[in-house]
Image (cartoon, rainbow, N blue to C red; front, side, top):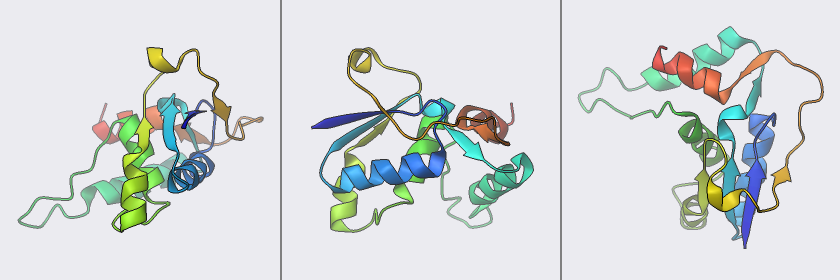
Length: 137
């Protein structure tokens, strides 16, 4: 069974926890419009948090960890934080999660689940804006 979640104007943490829970229950999860997912908070604080994660490990000889900066990869990493991705059940569940920027042709006609949309404009930024800031554009 495949679940398609529309991320447009959804809150990052709530969408990530819902997707992780569904994947742990054995369902295939596809998150579309992951570039339009919203992070609530102060823009400077959000950017500094993600930049410290990106800078972590830069001084070691291994030059890692590699930190992806595209919006769909940031979404997938947030979902990964909601489960035990190194152990058996969580590792298998993480393989069932797919995140997409925009809506692919195969999901256009499918029914999409909306997770608690923003009703009032909030302070914060979208994953697309965060991605551009992390890349330095």
